[in-house]
Length: 171
Image (cartoon, rainbow, N blue to C red; front, side):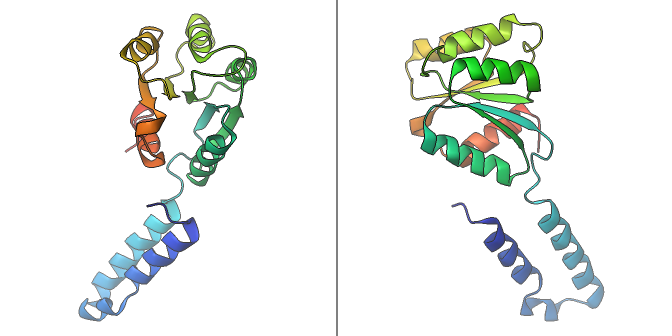
């Protein structure tokens, strides 16, 4: 379940400052409050200053991804076609790319091949996020250099966030 930032912060603050604190010594309560304040100040900055390029032609999904990663502190770049994706990748050098396969114009596999063939972008990790779920498509994506392949129909936003965290080695 995803709660808006304001509500998450409110819940965390109420937990940290609840009547249960009466059972804690002043020193212990101060430590717990301090830890809660640190959590509150950093909870939405998981991807602070990390550049994420997502290539998606579905406006609704693109909006969800943008809203979620933007709320986590990421610097976002969105593209809805292959040409735009390649230009942004070469210009901005994102830390990770979320790539759809079925796109207008240049398809995702072609984009992936061009990214991995270019000396400027070959080291950028690419996570494929597609509705294609055939074993041959998954194998092709990995052969072309994708670090992982997520099937849209079987993952939620939390799983996408966790995969990006894993690829970027963020705990």
